[in-house]
Image (cartoon, rainbow, N blue to C red; front, side, top):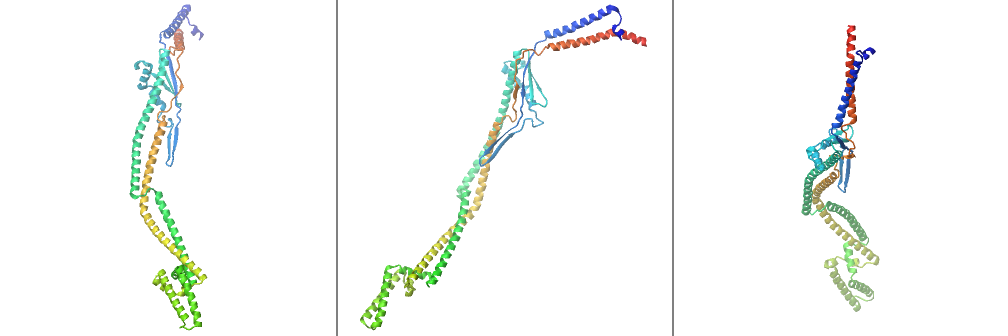
Length: 455
């Protein structure tokens, strides 16, 4: 093996191969130096974006109507959509590039293209701009970032405007529905004179109360009548007779005539024992008694009428004090019973009217309830649409998620190309391969000779 490496040919062969290696080293070193010296300097500036990707939600409570809820799912929740890929395409689009070129003050054709890299399983977006001047690279990166953000805002605003336009059309229909249902309720109320369901419920409650009051009044009337009849039986005077007697006994003239007639009757009874019938005093007192009876009859007929007074007996009129008190109670109870019956009659009439009114208003109230429900549903839908409109305006990152600047653009201090390390590694790699070729040339004759001897 050592013989193969040393070879033959003497010092001249060694010098030739050393000269070849030197020439190769100079060649590859010259090429690397030429590349580094003659290649144009390029500078890289860029920025890094991150998409948080969290969802958002909001809820609005509507008094007496319900709740309006708005929820936005995460931008990364769908496997078929990738916001990072969308933003990558947006960063490389002519729209953003043209806006960035206008921002930087250069023609769009001279504006450098952006190199966008995505990291798998992360929401990171790397953007790099390559220019021949560090200041221009820095300015291009800033211009691209500003143009990207401006276009994002414009896209979000376009989406909001499109949504607002659709919502406004829906709101106009909902508002028309609310107006129509309100007008239907007003016309129905004016036609039926039933303003609200409370009015119908109040009428039903009033009818129930009238029915209860009527039952109580009828019970009271029967109780008073029974008491009056019982007291009338005790004094042996019906209610109608007791009332006429009380009228007579309440008249001062009739009472005075009754007392005088009683006194005259007592006087006549005394004269009968003392004198005969034809005695002058007896005859005078008898005539006086007859005149009192006639006067008493005239007064009674004047108070009660001929028929009413004619039905009475003198024994019924001449009552003792206790019977007179019972008589007054009979009359009072009879009057209260009559009043209760009259009240019951009035309540009965009112109850019948209310029942007819309730029966008439039952289908009307059902229709009014349906109209009010339709109006309430229309108002609820309208209010919910307004709430959805407000919540949709609040969430501007629904379709285009928030892109935060993780790494801002920076001015490059050194060029990214040409690289000294790359030039040196290329020269060394080329020289190593050259040396391998020279080694093969060095070993070719000894190998051939050794193989020839073996053969």
